Length: 111
Image (tube, rainbow, N blue to C red; front, side):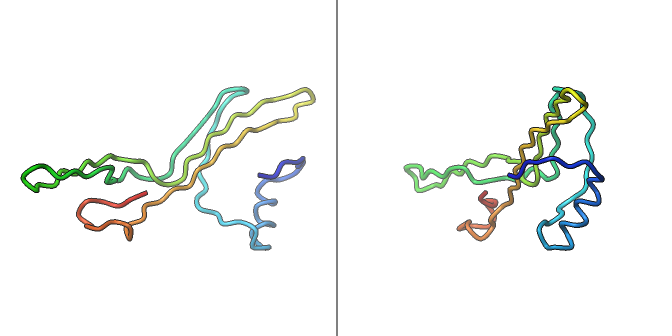
């Protein structure tokens, strides 16, 4: 993750980065928060994921499925310092499902 100072238009910075091929814009949501108040959002979906499988004594297979949220998760914590400088702690996670890793597609994808 890069840090630094930027005293201009964030949209112009993103446009400049995209013309250099330095980023991939996945979505453009917005979020509003206050000083020292964490904000978060998820852009994704809940999917069933096979979490376990057990064979009983009668050779019956018992599968355990959990629901997981996949997509883009973003957490932002802004802190306004002296001189109206804004320090932002940003945590991001991008996840997806891997349907090719399942032995039986009816059981759901793997993360």
